[in-house]
Image (cartoon, rainbow, N blue to C red):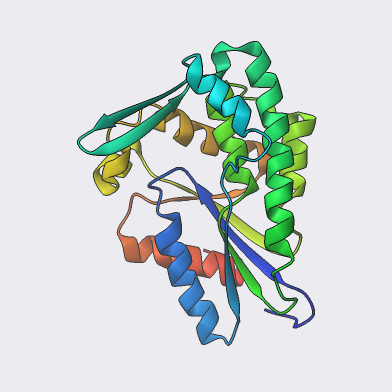
Length: 218
């Protein structure tokens, strides 16, 4: 499975509460049993060049924070500004490339890399925030997709909205959760990425994920 000459990449994408982190840890255990040296990568919507623009968006009300039950929720309505909807994805692409460059130089050739959050997730966030549902088909979207390394195996996890809200309490009042779930389903269909439903018993889902990631079958 690991050729010893180049890194192998495993990527589990999906909306908040879909179960990515838990299942990625189980995958890591299986990889460690096989003698693989693993490294985690978590990059989500980094703010470097885009930070001033985000401050501006908050100032004019395109980004709003509310606290309910001790949990802070962020609602982004970047789609309300045509200018922001156009320029923010470009700045995010640059920021992501910078962040990935500094992460990538830490990866050894023999590492098995586990992506918890990566370029597909940032692209999904942008699609939700700007309501540009064809963004993945644009040059910006294609650049985000090119950042996913070769020699990878990738899946998208999907769980029903009511399941996620019960499972992850900090999504309970997330007004954009439905859109996030929809966008990941769209990306799975348009990009032919394996979609695994995470509404069943955990062990059943875990077995599906492990079998597909390690052996290419369910």
